[in-house]
Each structure stands twice: as C-alpha cells, then as structure tokens.
Image (tube, rainbow, N blue to C red; front, side, top):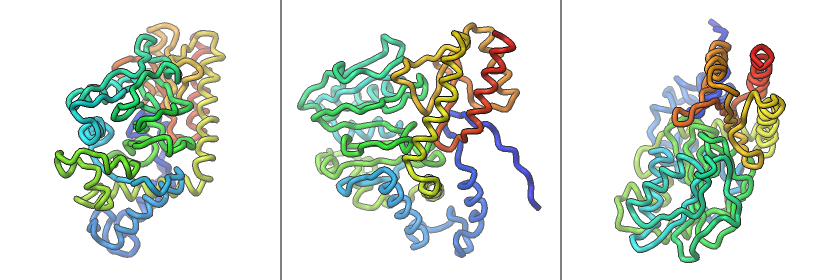
Length: 364
C-alpha cells in the first residue's frame, strides 16, 4: 500500500535534512541489500559487499572534493567533539604551542580540549565583536614553529563562515563539520580537515577525517591505539567495526550530489537559497536583524533576530505552527536560525522567506 508522506520544512542545525531520494533508496534496500538477504546494517564489515560500499564512499568523496593522492580519508566515530581531543593528542607535544582562531562556541570547545595536552593560544578572536565576523588575514598571529593552526570554517550558532582560507606556513587544521561539501575548497591548504557527517554528508554517527600523509608520520606514538590516526589509516578505517549504515548513507548522499551536477551545482544552489533569506532580512527595514556581518555570512546557517522580544516569541511560535522545524536559535544565544544545508530544498527556503515577509506585513 502506498502511503503519502508529508515532508517537514526541516531547518534543524543537525542532525539535518537528508535528500528524499537517498531516504527512499535506503528504504527500498533496507531489508535486502543488493540480493544479500540482509540489511546493510547486518552485513559483516569484513564482507566483500560492505567493502564495496566503504571504498566507493571514499572514492566518491575524493572525486567530489578533488582530494589529492597524498591524503588519507578516514571514517571515524565520536563526532567532531572527539577530534577536539584527538588532534592535540596526536600532534601537540607538551612543550609545543598551537594557534586557535576563535570564531564561536565550537572553536572555544576545541581550544579548551587542547589545553589538556599542550599550550594552545588565541591566534585571533572575534569574541569582542560577539562573533559577528571572521578575522581578517592580517589579524592572525601565529608562530612559525607552532604544531598547527586550527580554525572552524563555519559557525553554526553565530552564522559566520570563512570565505577564503588563510595561507599559512604551519599545518592548517579545519573543523568543517557544518559546511563541508557545500562549495569547492582547496584541500591542499590544509593538513587535516574533519567533519561530523550530520549536516551535509549523511546521518549522525560518522566523522570524516581528511589527513595529509606527512602529518600522520609526525604524530605522537605514546597514545592509545584507537586514538591514533595511523591506526585507522593503516587499516582503511576498519580496525574495529565502523558505523556501517552511516557510511552506506554517506555514500548514497555523495551519489546524490554527483547526480545533480557535483559540488559546483551544490554551491550554486546554496548561494541561491541563502540569498532568499538574507534578502528578506536586508529588505525588512530593521524588522529582522541579521547577526553576522555581510562579508562573513554563512551559506549554511542564517541567524537573525526579530526587532523586539515579544514579536520574536510570536514569530517562532507561528513558524512552528506553520510547519517550519528547527528555526529557534541555539539555546546559548537565542534568536532565530534557519539551517539550510545541502539537502534543504529551495522550495523550503522560499516558503520560509514568504512566511517571514507575511509575518512582517501583519506585525510590522
């Protein structure tokens, strides 16, 4: 029996929307994956059927992001939050320093974890500006002998995003959890990139790490086996049982991206979606107030306030009633936020734009 399903306008910050085509394919294959008589979740991670899924996901990611041959692609667990610890554990010796660019809550968390292992310091910070912007290149202060320089490419809570990454002569490490695969990037600028999958890559449970070979070779050895990048690189991320269903879903999301025209088309769509909402803010004559400065605006997270607190509460209540899910700002800052990741369709953004305009007409 066919059941008509009404899809929500999903603006959740993560886990976020997944492409409908991917969900439908997973549904079709859920009980019998490619004639095995088993769900992909039931396959041995040592089986040839799963190995094909695993390696194809890696190959698709390498193709879409133009990842050079001297980088390893790892599928790990523990989210970006575990990477906050793994990075200094592997690369920051007790006598070394590492620069951290503070642009929001997640970079603050990464900095705090690094303090356990070595001597991190603020290479730049926009905290005094309430994290409304990304630092300029000339604001970065770092040392030539630093272990690395760490940045967060997109800040989900504050709605800011790096447009151009700095050119530095120390290993550059990027947390790209919330904007990976949203636009073309030059992988070669980075020694290591990490990203939780639950924004643009797939469901929660998988963490992608893209790491340069020479960085692996420099890593500390006196740390637990499971927390060494070399362990996972040597074993094709199969040292222990990986999150097999999550990797399968990640692979299908990558196939979807390839099918619609690749990362260039994704970037075009993301620009188009973001423009709808930012135009609604900019044309509201102060009814809506964007948080991020214009040259630092995120394509993934549109953050704003309504002109007064009473109206803002009404806006959020009516948005929820109208079927828009997840448009409350992060609990730490309040306000409003529409997360418009790759799989959020243009139609959902247009509907929310129309709601914003209508709400202003009635309440302005």
